[in-house]
Image 1 (cartoon, rainbow, N blue to C red):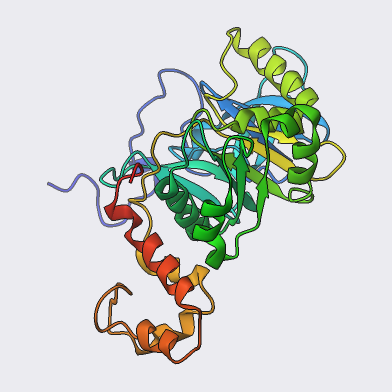
Image 2: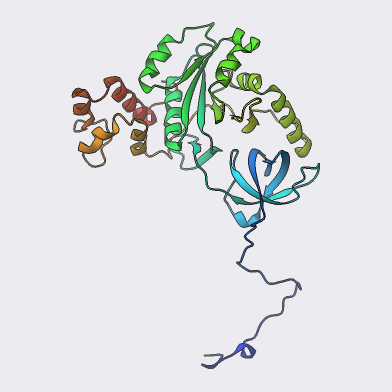
Length: 336
């Protein structure tokens, strides 16, 4: 039965009184055009430590962002208390578009991807040459994630006093990846940190590696004072101590405009989120040869046009081998 006639006006419509006496909810959200710009330095239990100009500000995510989460490296817009004083809290109202994203999954069957860091320019893959032994498949997986996410890779080999880097360099030579070789003695004297620092100037670099390779020791050698300052600041806010490598932490590189992001040690690096067809973009010398490939070519099958492309002398065979090794890395375990 129709409650109102064809020509109703506002007086004909019943409205329920607002029992709470507050304003009715609306879908119209403020634009926050006067919000301050900041960078997320670390995330801990829903509290985000951000750098706003030269101040470290604690913030929380605004409800209007819904499930969208901010991660270390994100450029964000903040409103509210921006003084950085103790016991104050700002609000993140907007997360700006990301230029790059380093992601991983727990394993290759896990559909849930985890964003490790946003807006990084470079991924420093830290591996020990011995104690523990190198894990080439884990390195391969990190390389795939870097290429897929828009980051340039850097290979950092530690503990060269225990083993030679020649075998590992031969394995990755065809990829033309920049690298640094360090030893324990050089880490203690500071010489290793200086050589690594030369690759970091003007860039945001995320450091990744499994436990025991010396990743955090290297990061501490690069930014010792900033590590202590930031860790103390975070602990003072949360009221609890937390090991520095259980969550990612962005630290300014003294003397340069670069940034170092220390990430938690990884046991595995799942690639369920990576489309294998995008890996070829990291091989510009091979990509033109794919024009003759069959549709949905895996680049590792009998009809792949890359074999003829390489045989004709357009590219180094070692490059094709490296591509196929990276593409096959999802089918192997990291310990192979």
